Length: 368
Ligand SMILES: Cc1ncc(COP(=O)(O)O)c(C=O)c1O
Image 1 (cartoon, protein in one colour):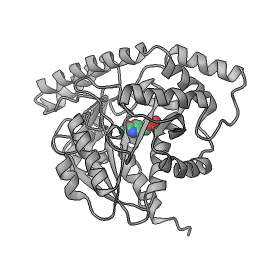
Image 2 (tube, protein in one colour):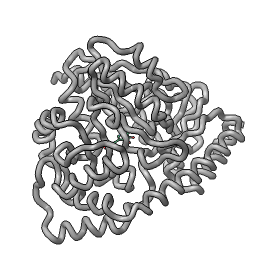
Image 3 (cartoon, rainbow, N blue to C red):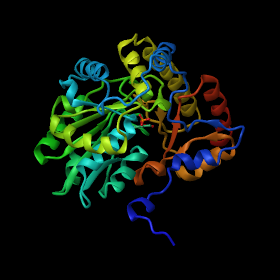
Image 4 (tube, rainbow, N blue to C red):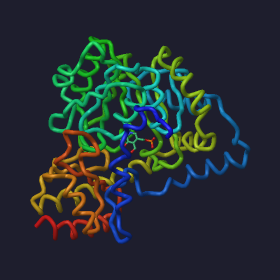
């Protein structure tokens, strides 16, 4: 009998995947966490040009210099974060960036504070690093700095912040981000800030912890912003002390991010941002249709200010998600995202308006 490490064998497969595996062929999928739009044409063209002109070899480990230059400009322009190109690393998706940071920062026995509810990867990656996962219950679906403070111990190494949030669709205020950053300074831990939904905000504004503290690692990706989930292109910014350690993990697990995807990301970031604005507009219109429909059925749903998820409170989320799946609507039970999410389901509106309308019809039969 083969034996596997506890830190891996104790991880459950994602509750999101379980729902997809249970889906019937006629199901409407409101479970997906990716934009349904094609990658914009000018980005694909840049990738094809890169292949044809031979950009098919290893790149520098941290990414091609041109991309790191424009990312350093992007951080200053969009996030008020002043980082040199050397303080930027290009990774295989935000997923790899999160993994690198956890491996470099978390010793066995260290505490990692994760938002509860929070994105499925956070606790799994903390466990793989040997860390102890401490769920911080959200207040009105955001991290409350006072509640975070109550969970800090001598072993706290990392706090994960994810605004806009998957699964909640909530957006932290600038004041909250500043208060969380002050905690990182006072107690000397690192904020791992996952900002992949930065450009999908419908009300409110985006703020990055790294604007207020050097104890922050900022993770982002082309994945959601440019509808490039399959290209596997992410990036992070952090002070040089972090980057030097992160390089070692990145070098041995990945060598470098995909060369063609780096060329595509360069075109995405330097090109017209109209495609992003168009997606944001479409998501907002879909969100409004979904919210109106849910509320007409009496389903309690806070208005999600960002990302592309609604997170209604429905009672027993496992039962409701399973019964909706039986009626051909795939959602994700809140329990996939933490202990404090059991009475929610996550509904993704990254699908067509007609799918949302059809799904609402099926849900109406169930909820009313
Ligand atoms: C909050 C959050 N972070 C990170 C990721 C992973 O991003 P990537 O595809 O760039 O690895 C996702 C994907 O769903 C996400 O929702």
